[in-house]
Image (tube, rainbow, N blue to C red; front, side, top):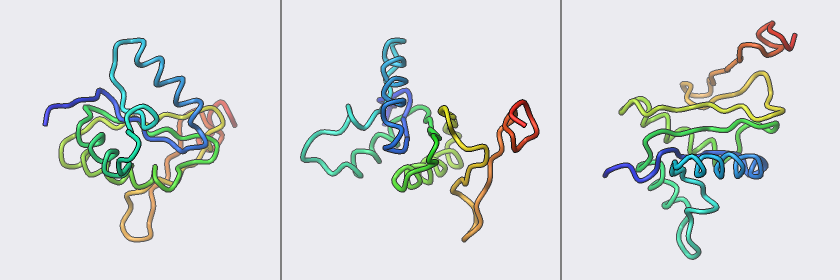
Length: 129
């Protein structure tokens, strides 16, 4: 299946307003992002449609806001990580204003989780320290 979207946008519902602005900016640059509020049609199973979007994108962005990953975003990220491992899909973490310095990332073995500390954050001893 050829890519239908340039970028899949995965985000916590609480960050929708910020991600919508980014979505509009991407469209203004002639890119075709998959954004659920535009791609999902009434009456369709949104989980199935989201999976189609994930399978038909050339890259993906996972947004981290003040409240971290949402439950559905967590599931999307796991599916995206499979594509990263199997196909080398570019996966771009995007820190929104107010994002925590330490993030719990899915993908660890069993109950283990990966933690990300971003350069320049207070946790990394950078400018925010």
